Length: 266
Image (cartoon, rainbow, N blue to C red; front, side, top):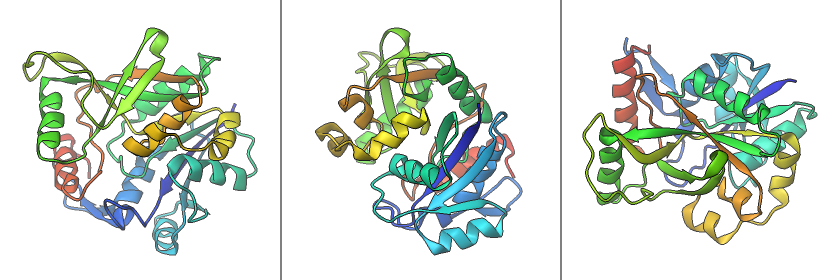
């Protein structure tokens, strides 16, 4: 019943080259790399048996080993983090009940998000992959819409049906909202949190599936599961007053640092 957390960390990011090694300053002024902060978030998850960083780059390996992380070197041919997780799991000999992909750009991921995700996948035998979603309030939705008006690709949104079954994920803000919402008012928009939990059989099969047109258009790796008819479970999680954002673009560094100061993350 073991759980492996893999943090895929690619140096050659198209939108933000070298992103895993960018420094983020915490509330006390301490600077730590994005990949170290993501690793620390993974290590805080209860029930995880092993945490590894999967990378294609010797600079990331050196930095990660410097702060005590276990590193698995993977190919530079991996097309996304899910393929990198599949390669890392295979290199480690497999055998885990659940493999979690905690993306290396999400250091603000609370441990209870991942714990709820693991529990959700364990409790739904039909789901082959699970991912958390966070209901936006009016303030969060306004931030999404401001990014899109400015031409920035910000967070991803998710829509799902009965039983939490995913219908679609998009970098556009979906569903359409016909009216404005107050800052603290719940909205019908769900922020997709960049964490995935896979059953090992589905993860092993994933690199052999051809990317579909929706994955290519949106640049969202999870759409490959939907385009190949696989069941994806959306697990709603609670923020508990904690802000959440990923580092998608260079401008997000200042936004995430402000959130770290807000919650006192050193």
